[in-house]
Length: 97
Image 1: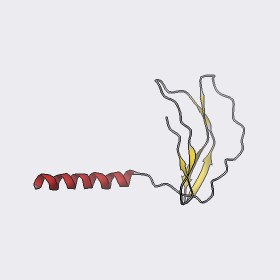
Image 2: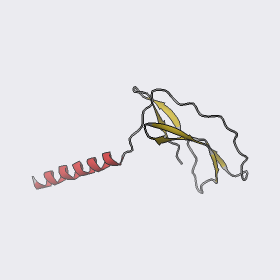
Image 3: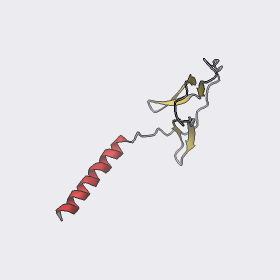
Image 4: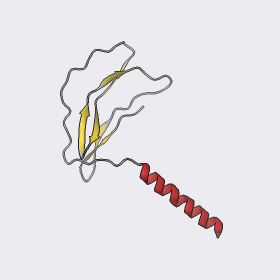
């Protein structure tokens, strides 16, 4: 009995901690339009262009322009961020390596 109680208590604590660590998404009714700007030249041919991202600000998003970045060592590739449609509206899914 003590073992089962310990197991449930541990799982409850892990669940509460995990829920608190998940960033909440901001849902917007209309998908924002990316502003137009000129892409600067690459510092070297090896660099990778990272498309602009949408950053949470208040109850919405603001756009951060794209930038050049040196590639990571190893078998990494960059997956660009994108808008995902939900029942309530749109949320931004950040890009990642």
